[in-house]
Length: 417
Image (tube, rainbow, N blue to C red):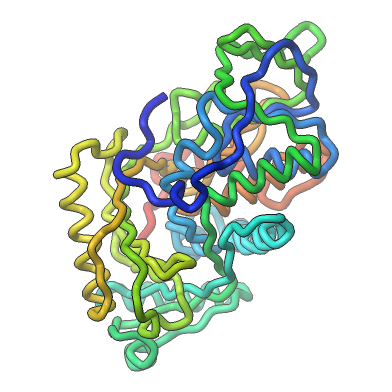
């Protein structure tokens, strides 16, 4: 497996002794088998098992051991591509439907988090989406108007209002309500623990699938490297950002890498109004949030790259830039990184996730949350895949499905301000 991150990671220190699960042995039957034990796999496994399906989750390494460890836990209904730009790309009806599905996904995540028996550090939050320069203000105001007209709970803040609430000023900002934050490592583990204990979800770590075929009766047969076998009616690939794992004829995503720092806990959080999530219009963008114990998480400075930066010196350059940005916003904070890492993530051609049934392989599904909003997409995807399996309609099925027209277009717009 390719390394998805390099550096000194933070989240696993908040859950030092997670539950483990045995490798699969022998032969088993299932309604649905999920390949991948990260954010997408855990949410999908929980949702399917809770819906009454006999569900098996297989992870070739450790649960939450891939990109979930590098996830920064910002949950927002806004996306890397602005609503106004998505409207131009796929039309107003579909764009608004997609954004509303993202908002619903945040609410669904909240409901699940608050039903779990352990603390996943899930908290409702608002977001401050700042114009990075005066030139970005017109586009930001158009985005505000698009969001407002579509019924989202948003405000537009002028520079004086920003300065009255924060120790910095920006040319303008959209405040969105209905977002959230989470500890992704604790969330994945708690979901899987609860799914297995309360809903019969079977979980097996260190279980690598080496073959997948369909038998004469149309049932899927999966073999592991140790010789175990799974017979399943439905197979879901929730393999994160690993394009080589894709089994269908999909349009591959562009792989990028991003940098993240986490500081020591701050002694005085009063300058940070409402513990808002903060991000900016500039691309590559900068974003920041607080943890439960008052640490600053800051990330961004994305660049094209299929592998994370392995060298400490290369990562230090970005860590220093992130620390300097935090210091500019909050001059009283101690911004020295206590943790730092660099991680890969994928962006699709049309800025939407890959979620749905394989057009050429019946009852094989993908839940791949490409983009900067992966956890929200994972929740959306879990609900969509449940609906597809059970024969229910879903409003985003044609928008994020694998045969959508926008995947075949070479001129899909890139996110803009």
